[in-house]
Length: 69
Image (cartoon, rainbow, N blue to C red):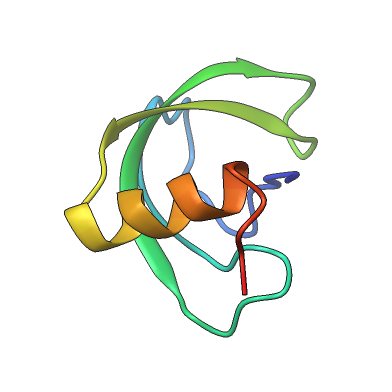
């Protein structure tokens, strides 16, 4: 999955709230994360999850395991 910032305040943002959908899913997942790398000011961002609600963690686990139905 590729994460690209859509809107951000002035300055460097390190911690952020996230909402996203996994490929093939209609469910919107939420999490909090920390930017660990950015290619440039508008490019892809590498995110380390810092807080993931249980329901979102389970959905991500199923997706990673290949059972994202």
